[in-house]
Image (cartoon, rainbow, N blue to C red):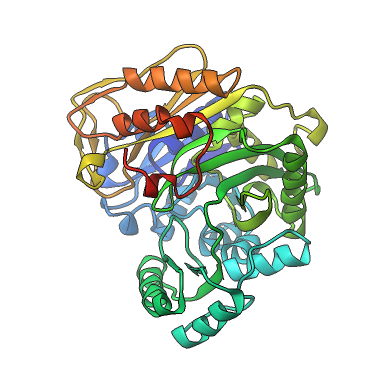
Length: 446
């Protein structure tokens, strides 16, 4: 049994994990930076430990401090949430060496799937469709250009150890390749400390469809349906929904089976996400696997009734899955909007500062995951997301109407947010008709 969990994260996901632990009778330990001394997660946990100054490199990314806090408080497990150290194999390995349960896959699996080139090769061997691309790492422009000519333009250049839209550039011709490669490689080196790249064919105007999977240590693997994450800005997700209105039941079955096959091929354990690109001809391709809980996991919870954080903890404790594939039922439609402290009218400039007045919506089928409150000061050091607004309706039309109404009630004074921008997206005829793809926000002025 897991008796005490240290949450190696902050913000709404830390609060989300603390609440799940409370319901399971598990004690919690929060870690916080000096900038987060008044943060909600530090107040809600049973214990809280300061692990360093505000910058994440000195606090939430400080492995030694987090491990020390775990040992000092007697916690027997660590939940990494998402971001920060959640997909860091070195951190997972430290936990293993210190006999601390890491609530996620093992370090070897993170290594295997975190490297995009190796992950692609694993999927090819498992018979999962992949986008045509390089099989081996690419380190220089000359080699990359030869590979791009073999694959065929346009191509996407990506950091092998990347994520979050960093270290990515598109080249539509050989004339564009050199600059695109050099820019992506430099960005990858700065963001991830590694300049290994890989190249794949660029699928034009696809949808971003991901399947949530759960896998236990007994070899059982299930998928919980798909999420449509096509509303993105600069490769960053903005609105997610489940299920995808553009997928037939036959295609959903094929993609779900491929997702399960992918997880089994990787010998995966815990919660994970298989991400696909879906083109206009209903051909889908493996893109990557995220070895952690996702920001958008609540939409899956809303349509399945499952608590994914609790499932993660049970799996980490060695328990078998609580559900089988035949017992998973999809009900209704859910949408999530990411509310960020930023100003869309000023090139999405971050807006840290003190929240003077806060009103958040409620009602039937409305959920707000957040860690902010009136009087809370948003630090300048972290991601700008301050809340996730999630709604559930009987169908997509009702979910859109409910989200539109809920967004109209959001009041945050003292800082700028993107709430009005989200409202405008929801009222776009193309969005309401489901005629969107991952390029939509980059090609439309709202």
